[in-house]
Length: 446
Image (spheres, rainbow, N blue to C red):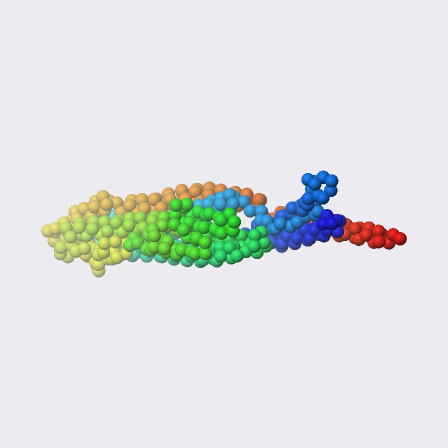
């Protein structure tokens, strides 16, 4: 009979052995990143009765239907979504902090204030050579500080674009890996250990991908093959079955970046790529503001300079050349070139009318205030993004904890299972022994 003791016990030992293997695998991989707890799926074996009651059902043991992952698609999706938001905020904040440091640490604000102070001191004695030399040196310092600040901002931009390109390359690598996993899933047996391992690999790749960009996923119910779209559910497909697209990045004239997927424009709103794109946008704004301030300073000083005369009584010449922060330069070679006197004044004139006009023009242009405004804009953005980043990190952490509690390995529970299935294995072995003893006793009857 299929429902005899030996058959039932044999199915029980097989089920207990599979459950022990699954439990041991859970314990061994408890700390492995991306591992999802498994459990053995067991069903009772029922057979139709041939007794006087044809509709009766006899239980004939247990059958192992497969190994099941304790995965929750909703929680996994939440981890990807919240993780992408946190990665965007963190990447943007890091970029903005670098922009802030590039402007603040070069001392551009202090150099402009020092130049204004030098012109103020020159008012006391416009013919004093040391005061003129000091004013010229402060002018040179302003030009050089603008140059250094521009170079620092350019370096920040290069760093952000390098990291963004590295992220693009990583997205393409992950997409190719996901396409290969999809192909293997189509060939794997349902509920097999190989299939569950592929599901783990698939889910980890999706989580890694979500750190770079916002992804939308769809899963085939029969095989678990995933379709991945970038830029939300309406975005283009990055992975479709065994095929993967190619993400590319392009740099604009102002240093900002844009993305395309297989040549089609793509709007990335989350993930580290979006954060770096937003930081580059702020960098471009700060860089444009810095260039405008430098250009206005050159125009303001040179305009007043050419309207007066220098210490030798000659018509004033421009002090600076250039149109922006990167190319501003001091062209005057001597402090005597500063046109402190008005047009028509003689050599060694103590008339400071033109110097007064120069100071008034600089005060009206207010380059120090403009620099302070650029710094304030960046600093305010940094402060705001810190609050946003902390909040999003907290949300992402909560989502990860919820997923871990649901899909992670509880060593205490696994230890209980280990004892329970071991006892079940021993008990079924004992049933086989008892059945064997019963049959031996029957056969020994004379």
